[in-house]
Image 1 (cartoon, rainbow, N blue to C red):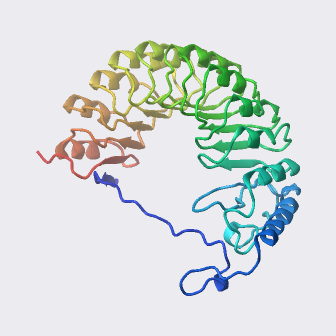
Image 2 (cartoon, one colour; image 1 turned 180 degrees about the vertical axis):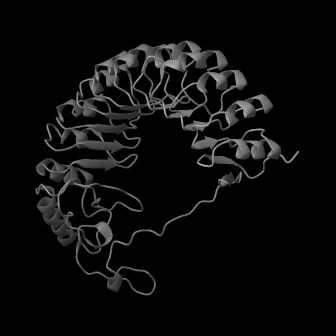
Image 3 (cartoon, helix red, strand yellow; image 1 turned 45 degrees about the horizontal axis):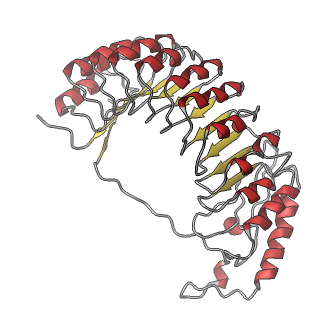
Length: 369
């Protein structure tokens, strides 16, 4: 028998301890830093070590994060080399006592611009501006950029097409418009694109059709609807359109993206009738339909997908008929049915009829009637 995973309604939050920026022997009993190195010396140490690392080809990426305070951290990434990149205690490039204001963001960005082997950049929300991004013009090594919600506009984002190796972009700038999408369409090597805070029009998504290498696209919470027809020209393997305006008519276009292996269309306007348009997705392995009004009729349509092994129906009003259809889906390895009206008897029925390899994720407050 498999294990049925039961989730409580409430969530357990686990907080990690703040990262210390000083060495252990430089922190007194009260937790105060006792280092006497002044800010200029700390900055100079950091700049020197960063330059040494970012100028060597065995360093795949140097990443700036803010998990606790403004600190400068080196992320250990797989560089494809036979040996690992140098690592330093506390992830701060070995600079004891590095503080928030030792190195300004613009100084850091100028440093990145000097280092051709920096491949991975991450900006926390609110810290970056157009002026910072403009310093990256033509950088030869950057492959991945992740930015939280920032003050950047199209002026700064216009730098992105000048980065020849840029393959992955997570963009949470304040406003993404049709003009922004036009800029992104010129990033010809993008394979991964995730957008949020989009205020473009539905027609604006036509610009994405120019990204001929795009495989992973996340447009969750955007106003896309009929604009999905422009995505049929892309070699997508993963597509997230949850919380969008996608409806049954949109599914006609989605059904033409036969390269898809993962599709998320939760919390949209789709119905049972629209799911028949997914019949052509013969390579689909994972489908998320959470918070949609799907019944047994719609489940029979996706039951025919030969490689589907992960299905999310959380928040879907499942009944006896739907449960019986699910029990016939013998390729399933993961089934998510949290927040559904499923009873304990129905859950037991699924447990008995689905293969042992299938993991069922359900609420621990399942109705016991």
